[in-house]
Image (tube, rainbow, N blue to C red; front, side, top):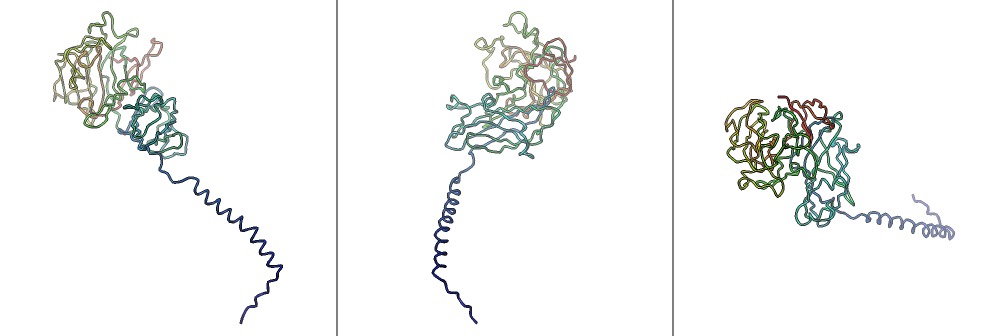
Length: 388
């Protein structure tokens, strides 16, 4: 059994020839275009920027806002400059949703801290190859709208974007404390804020080979009247409204450190500051009390009046106990109480933790009335009253 092969005529060959001539070039060009498309974007690594948050933050409340303060470290691991244009914070569970916060280049310029020779660059948002910078982050959201449990950072660069550095927003338990001082007209100087001139907020130091910021939520408590902290001779500690004011235990705990006997300084700022005795690292805090509050929280009271300490190492104290008086010892330009909560009993070695004050009365901007605040942390430059 066999099949009969039809005879191909000359006219049929002509038709086939025409089809091949007219169609094949089109197919070849299509294949060539396909190859070109594949070659348009050669392989390259993602943006070679390390994003790192050394200490996971915890949000605290003040007024109608919730605040999240932390440091984002950026290191350029490439040989080329990376131009940072924006940072978006996204809900880690809903990265396609609207961002929780957006920081554009105008905002980032005031949030970045550079180091070394490259810090003199005119554009601080150009991160050079091998350079590390710190972005001091502050997220302020409406208190009624809870922050997502986890936030993801999205860096927008000149040519690309990069996602990374997922953080928790409620890392530690917020302790509710009574205030460390009592009375009226207390100024929360250099209290939590993101201002570039806030020496507490920008207080990152290297200790034991590690960057830490124990002062992240520190407050310098001063008394003020008509916007000033003294009355009379500004070079006399007795002229300062807070000098000699008592300080109190903010919660139950055990005294783990106390330093006394360091003299007061003659008050003076800038070139007028001359410490009573040469400053060393150990003397920076002046006369000091540190209380272990439990759960890895330590309360630090600094710059106390010499001879005023009523407790010693090992003593058990209770909430509201009288501890000492405010002085001007150590690295104090004028009398004040430097107070902070950290993760270590050692000076500057721990990470600063937020906390809440049980109750205070906040001065309105007009200075005539106050409003009661419950379980909040005062922020920079607020003036508050505490009940006796």
